[in-house]
Image (cartoon, rainbow, N blue to C red):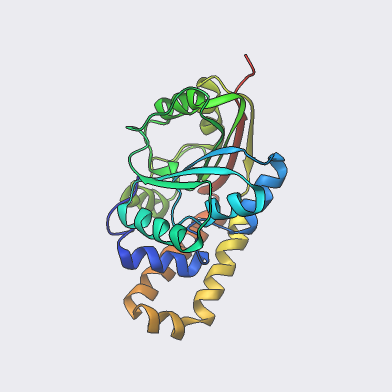
Amino acid sequence: MANDKQYSTTGIYRYEWIFGPGFLGYGEPQVTRQIIEQMQWKPGTRVLDVGSGLGGPAFLMATEYKAKVTGVDLTGQIVDIANQRLKEKGIADVFFQQGDIHKLNWDTGSFDVIWSRETLLHVPDKDALFQKFYRWLSPRGVVMITDYARRPGQGSDRFENYIQESGYPLLELERYGDHIRQAGFDQVLVQDRTESLIDILQDQLHKLDSRKDEFIQTFSEEDYSYLRSRWQLKLDCCKDGDMKWGWFSARRPEK
């Protein structure tokens, strides 16, 4: 679900530097806590974390909310790092595996929550994946996704080039929600959180600029230029209204 250059070993640690230790998602760890508290998880909640990254969200879910987490990520280096950190932390009820979510399978009702943060933007065929999510969830199980989306119609040339070069088949917010509904889910909630993402991107750019020397000493001038230009581009696309940040939640019906 990601390209090799973006998630090379250097790329992984470079992203972790700007997202925060253990995380590869926006607004962490606060956003993970915010979402979980809105969902009112019970101890023992079984979670499938799709695009589990370096394990930060899974560790938080297990230690603070007593969840049982299965993490899946396509990138082998990321899973290796997550498993090493899991070993060091000695956290029970967390398991990471490398694999393509399209090729994996679990029994019906295996999970109470399926969770994904900024991962499914790499997936062109969301219908097939959401149907699998539906099967894997228990009755009244919840899917929770945060992801990039786009405005209706054609965006700016800069935006269209960005998503084409990145390989992001982005959907409009409401269309994204429609695909979740078509899989059989109900109580589908689509939230436009773009203003929050703008604030986060601005904070991360400030962090990068104010600690530029530290970043370059750890990585390189080239890494700094790459990360800064990419973050500025995302910020500009959000401010222009071309790119959206969607929060999508839904429930599998009881029957």
